[in-house]
Image 1 (tube, helix red, strand yellow):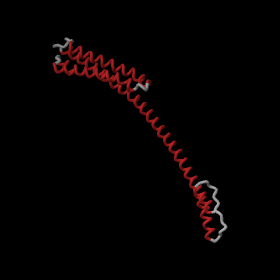
Image 2 (spheres, rainbow, N blue to C red; image 1 turned 90 degrees about the vertical axis):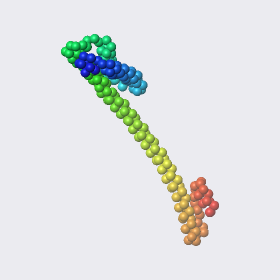
Image 3 (cartoon, helix red, strand yellow; image 1 turned 30 degrees about the vertical axis):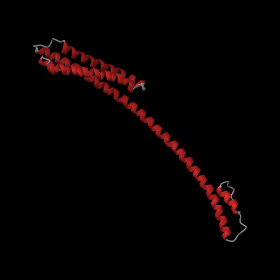
Image 4 (cartoon, rainbow, N blue to C red; image 1 turned 30 degrees about the horizontal axis):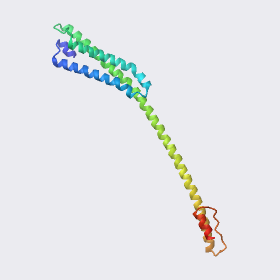
Length: 193
C-alpha cells in the first residue's frame, strides 16, 4: 500500500490486494467481537478486562480499513507530486503501524487473561484430583479395616480349632472347641463338640 502510494499509482492488483485486506480485516474483527462473549461468557471479569483493548483494536483497524477503502476508491491526491505522495505514504504507513500496534496490544492484553483462566482451571482440576485421592484413600482405608477385621475373626476361629486339634492329638478327649462366632466356623466348632 505505502509503496504504491509513494510511486503515485495504485494498480488494479494493488487495489485488489488492499481491498482483500480490508475484507479480511473486517471479517476478522467481526469474528473476534462475536467470539469473545462465547469464549469468555462464563467469565465476565475477563470480558471486562478485554473490553478496552478490544475497542481500541477495533477502532484502529476499522479506521485503517476505511482509509484504505477511501484511498483505493476515491482518493485523487495521488499524482505527479512526489513529495505529496511520500507524505501520503508516510501517513498510510503510520496508520498501518498504529493498527498493527493495537492488534499486538490486544494480543498482549488477552495473554494474561487466558493465563488467569487456565490457572483457575488447573487449580480447580488439582482440587478435584486431591478430592478424588482423599475419597479413594477413605475407601481403601475402609476396605483395609474390613479385611483386617475379617482376618482377625477368621484367625481367632482357626487358632481355636488348631488348639482343639492339638489337644485331641495329645489324647485329651475331654477338650471342647469354644467358638462364639455365629458364622460357618462357629457352626463347625459346635458340630465338633
